[in-house]
View 1: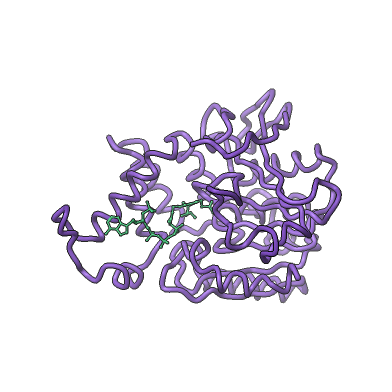
View 2: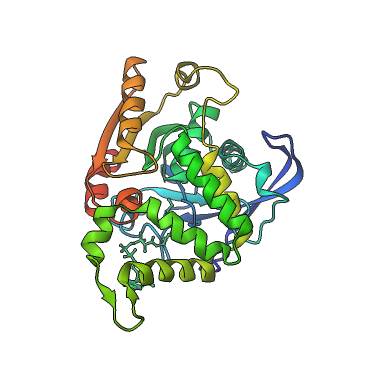
Length: 323
Ligand SMILES: CC(=O)SCCNC(=O)CCNC(=O)[C@H](O)C(C)(C)COP(=O)(O)OP(=O)(O)OC[C@H]1O[C@@H](n2cnc3c(N)ncnc32)[C@H](O)[C@@H]1OP(=O)(O)O
Ligand SMILES: N[C@@H](CCO)C(=O)O
């Protein structure tokens, strides 16, 4: 799948990943929405697993939150969104998905901002793996953002999340229909039993002669197969499982202490991937360290994907940050 408009491209040179892989050059693409760069406060938006830099527009994935006169008002804020190199939407190529961690991508995004002479942004916001990359960006450049808004995410992948990513990787490497089968499994993590019951209630798809939950899962599998590449899925899955701002750096306290941003954590009461329990713990630890932090929760039966569904709540929770 292509982006609606050709993205801008930055060339980053001599980049060594956390795992020691050397890239002489890497292309980092981005899109800008709203006022030109350097003419208004900047909001960095990080995409999630199957997203891209097209945050708004005909195929935009956050149109309900971002745009003219929306909560993140593109008449007031310049929105910049990078593509994760290798996400399949901009032609950028990486050698192996195993080379990269969430922190590497955060480092690339921060280098991209530096190349654009952006030293301070109003906010960094992202959902799921995009929120994890936002945490990593703040840990790498603690004074970069005035507001850090991690949604449906945390500063670390838990063992439960790693376990599901491992299963995703097994499917992606071994199945004869890797993208379809991986997406079917992933949908069980992105939603909840209550969400399925509310949608389908054991009904049968009379046209296909299968349960509606089955045809719905098959539909999501086929849809992703049409719009996403296998190598990109493997990479995004690898990024999800490697979120951890403390890896190789010491204690959580020492890593977060220098962060000057006002941290607005937004969780989802039914998120199976990044649980509200973990989010509350993070908020409490930040409070104890006297960082500027708050925790708010989206209430939804839909689980992790609620950050792409519950826009009324998301708009309300973010209104004060962007008013
Ligand atoms: C932040 C990011 O980067 S994400 C980037 C964008 N990501 C995505 O778009 C992810 C894929 N999409 C989704 O996960 C969802 O569409 C969301 C989260 C965006 C919205 O969820 P919902 O509005 O609840 O839609 P839901 O998951 O029920 O799916 C609806 C689809 O299932 C289809 N469907 C519904 N019931 C059935 C059924 N019984 N059998 C088969 N298909 C069905 C609908 O026709 C619809 O199809 P379409 O999407 O091709 O139009
Ligand atoms: N539905 C989301 C889930 C990942 O957080 C996506 O496809 O990107």
